[in-house]
Length: 118
Image (cartoon, rainbow, N blue to C red; front, side, top):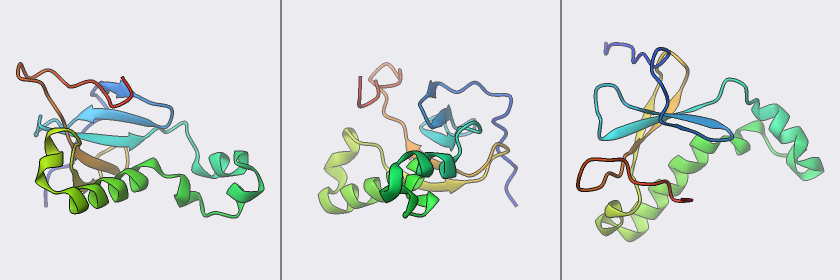
């Protein structure tokens, strides 16, 4: 069995409204995105009004949505996309909960590339 990935003592390099993002401690070419402990999917669902309340809470899980979107994009466009959009690489369960693993885009000097919104 693989060793448990410990992120509880690590500092996330990015923090969004719903997730924390960590460089994988053993694989610097990938990151792990985890839901923030203070964000509750059921609460998010209730805030979306009647239409939102009719959907399952999992609908609001950004990790699931990102995994699905990246898989579809790379499947449709192919390897040429990898230079611009990270790949979905799977799921892990570190000490802070289940997270999605995606590739990290870096510049020639090895610095993290800016997020898509920057």
